Length: 72
Image (cartoon, rainbow, N blue to C red; front, side):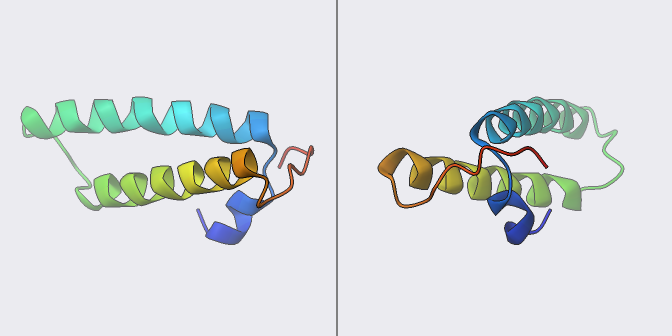
């Protein structure tokens, strides 16, 4: 997901996306421990996406970014 796409999400959509990504990250870590991971690069992608979402959420909290109010 690109940063420009993340910026267009509403607060609720970002929170839902964050929860989904964190669940997926936990599943991928479990697969990695069992050596069943097919796409190791997905871990890096998810970690970066989670960081981007948390950054946008924090900016909204501080008032640096407006809440769009529309879901993408």
